[in-house]
Length: 550
Image 1: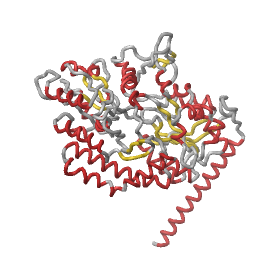
Image 2: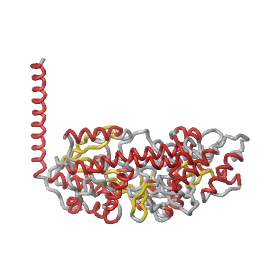
Image 3: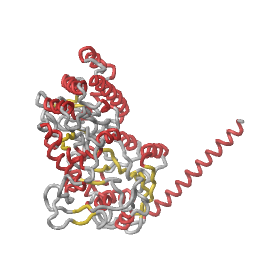
Image 4: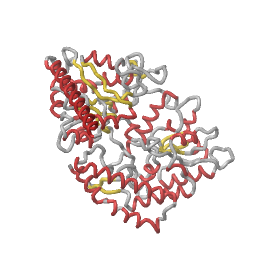
């Protein structure tokens, strides 16, 4: 048996050695093929004088038929002279396959769309797997460099504590993305009852009480649900406790941190937090908040909202379409409008704002030759142009979009640049990459499309969403939020993640218990506050304060 095991082990080592030699030889040949390729001056296309192949890791979206034959892939390769050798993984397995790939050492020259967390960027940057991009951006990526100058948050969001940039993200500015915690209310019911859109927390209580007791749907039944919601995990912006806590103290529903006078502290152990919980408990105890709001998913809200007789008074969600389809055949969505942030008892009025930059996407690995590094960063720089962004998202001109005609107005009421066209077909396409890889979608770009004239029509939903968000939430953007995208030191990142999970779970569990009445404010509040001591709250704040200061 021992001899058999030794033989088996020997065979495995021999195979690994053979694969390593083949990989080394393959890499050597590939490097030799790139050494004689001339890279054209910055700003000129194609990027290289003869075809260069780059291996790229990315997800395979189920809605895209074939990335190899994709119209946009072919256009990009023709424009740049860079041939993409795809290393594709299922979109829902991206993170697992990424970790396996990077830890095994079997990774390509380019990570095109990696959903790279700050910790991953630092870890693999420190190990030398990811290459610093600072000098490459400075010398070969004028569009990326300009974006870093124009968008004051971008450089901070992508620079690691060691001063290096290891990844380039998607910049995705849009009003509905930046202000997802919206509150939609049935204006038809308000008019029926002679009520105004609530402006304060007291107003909201009065409105929801009337929704419950005064039969606004007119069916003679006490079936109205004044306020419903779903969990944030199943419905974007669905966490009702975010919207309802903000009139008392800022609630990001994630870190539960606030910043005042450059000092980082916890929101969830303050008197203001207690007052917010007491307000929500009052609503819940009187049946004004749906009992399922803590646990139900988007489908449950959708079923409730689309009953034959409307029973939904209001809902917290980023997009009303999660609850009601913006369909002219079922026009119930036209009854709802957004409610601006409520003013609290002490005059607090604020809207949550989320960063336009999330995790990194593009990274260069140590398997890229110098020529490949330059060509790859030049490719990313081209992806930051409006031409590339437009074709990537909407496909060829004349199919998904056209140039706007004279007199067509954009979302800001100015002459539009582009008009989106309806696209017929099934669930899949092969005309673009949708939103894959690094890109630059600014507020200005998004607003430059022709806005449908009727914001309540089916094709006008985007106009309405833009207007509702710009008018009702942007003016109240909070100044107390802990900025997204700040890097935690690598040596602290694992500890910070563990503390964040433990503390957040504790806050969310107790929030539900206090709101539903399972815990009593008189008897249980002091014990709740004392519980933070055992969760190392001081250390949690210390780590985030250091990152903020840096």
